[in-house]
Image 1 (cartoon, rainbow over the protein chains, first blue to last red):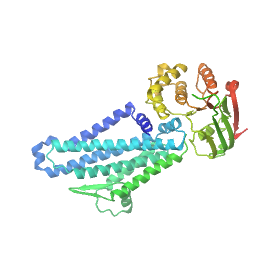
Image 2: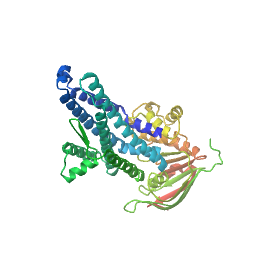
Image 3: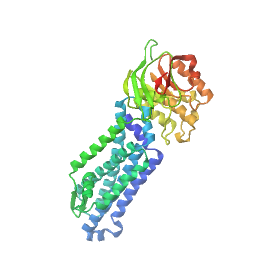
Image 4: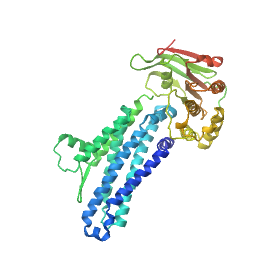
Length: 243
Length: 206
């Protein structure tokens, strides 16, 4: 299993991807740094502590969310590409081996997404605790990061399923559109529209309003949805004919 | 090392894989054994590659395939390799899955690089290689881990005359002890060392 993981890791981490990965990380770090408004000075921030804290929280989480969702879709598209599929022909001679290949593929996607969110979260805490006067609520931040993680997994699984069914990079546009649509409707606590309700109940979503942190659906239900999607991804690829 | 007396074989019973529009293979009952080359011949689209893919379990099929759990090396006819990996990285990655350590893999690859005369491409990115060199790398990945069963789909395609000759000699030698199955539409090149030959036409044995 570990060799399959190494295979997928080495496949993904080409020089180009490595540069892109570190560039994305840098983007997240810079984004979080600027959302802390450190240029206003400690005294000024201290005067409007709560206002700037919520702004910092909202903006930095938004940066992590947008960058990580796009990044996870990109990773999923690379891992579900034709080139990766051809690695099956080179390495697999039984269904058991194919299952290990697919599990390693899914595992790597989850690992990288988690890593990105971990670094983002760490950055929020480091900047928030060391360089600002804000009273950082670690529990709220961890909850938000957990929800963002579920959200990225949802989009990652969606891209993988779509790529498995229609092998074209263009299908990534559909989840991107869905993500944009989700971002436009999320934020309203009361949703009347049925389609909007369905979307927010399926795709992990949350809102923070001042110190209130709320989900549209219980997290466990979101986790079930994601497990179902990932299982579906593996099943499709397990029974699918290889080229 | 295999003993000379050891029999390695693959049997197919009523093997069927159908695609839309009457394409595929139908009710194939075949037997492949070591001791000489096993050839699957036929025109383009006759079902040769489909048969090999069934044996490799790369496609769903009905019927039975009986084979022992031994190391298999497979070189597909159509393939895409990761463009941004070097030849050595690619071979090590694939070889590790097949159970060999990095050190052994690098040692083995040296012999194959010399054999195919591609030493200078060892640290080159796959995207910079010609089709012929890519085919050589494809063949090396199927042979590098010393498999007991070797399945090669059109192995001579894109190879220069000298490499074709060397490969034929090498496979003939290997086939004495190991099971070698080759699909080709150039059977005359393999005539001298044949064990079995199956001609497939429209998915059925002729």
